[in-house]
Image (tube, rainbow, N blue to C red):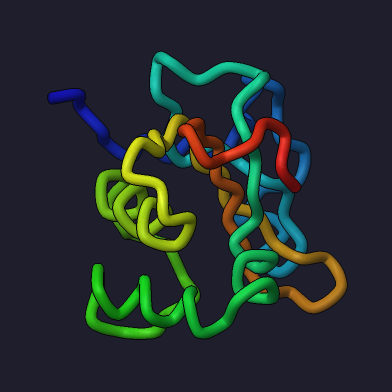
Length: 129
């Protein structure tokens, strides 16, 4: 079984590049920063934003949250990568889906947080945004 631990790194994004706007200095307009990165992560992994998933199918999003966390929360802060992977498997109906990375960001226009998920699986196409 692979280890999936959160390792929040406010200073870099998933590509290892320095983040200019961190949550400390810009609490409502920070750049995406690395929360989790599996050693298997690759630039070719599919990418999806949590707020887009909510827009695509609110009911499926809520049902998947309910099954994993017993709530309809939109925040992934403090949630473990293994749980998020199960959530994504339910949402995308793909038990082969593997979560390879997570970034946390903030929408500059409204200050709401969002999460970026990097993954691969049989039903997940590459470079989804």
